[in-house]
Image 1: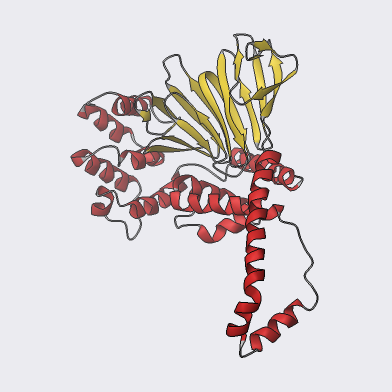
Image 2: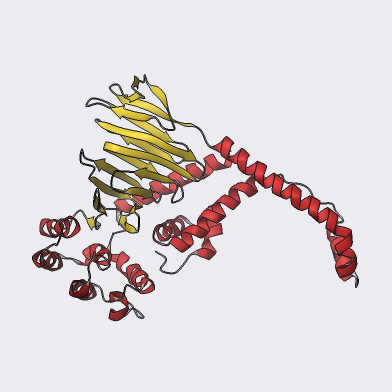
Length: 385
């Protein structure tokens, strides 16, 4: 993954001009970098507007005219008076075109509903059963009982399967944001769009996808469990964020927000200690002792997040264990990490990530291929609009 910013790659990324591997790396960087993500959002919106502008053939003598005027000595004095009225008219037209284009884009590309397919039983939309297919509009609830399942087509960016005993609501669907609310139950999402387009609100966090596959489960108390099978997902609540890669999970609790992500093959002692640290007030030192003792190299995913969530001597102990497992790269100091220097933390994270997953395994290669295929479908669908 990129440990530096990716501002220069964003235009090519937005146009699908990077390799599959580079696309994945930029996607993964965007989930954790607010600066690059803000630039990407601006570029994405600009591209949408630019696509709507008509292509007009320039006059054959346009360049010669520009050259002649540029070579004229009195261009500053004459051209200002000559072009001022024309410039004002052109500028006014451009503002009008952009405004109309933005409105047209919103109305054309924003379907007010999502298609729902009945998989089993009798799923209901707004308390009315659907037969084979239905439409979920903004504000409507889709509900399944113990014998029902359904599948939602999220525009052209992916699919969501709804398990039995689940309630979901369509909150928003527009070119820059697609959002569901999962009140209770379980859903499985497979999204192949660029990052930060699909969100799921739960009672204790917001899941933001990054071209991925994952499941979300909400119990009757509002606690949520995220499991990621491909790509990355960010769990967010206010200023608290957990970045969860493939093979990892993360729990949330109402009033607390996202816990600390962990790989599901971590030991039981490690996961139990983490649960106490995340969700029990005034966790005891033996919990941190157990977690640090059971930590493997791969568990630096958890330790990296935990550095900012503990303080004082506990933060120093987490740092020392992480440095023992994977020494920090050049330029990353102990004092800097303990002071939560974000640049140093990001630099170390770039090194740690090579230990978080086996990206050369056959299973991971298959997932990457599926992701690339989905992305091609998304880009093809966008090109046909």
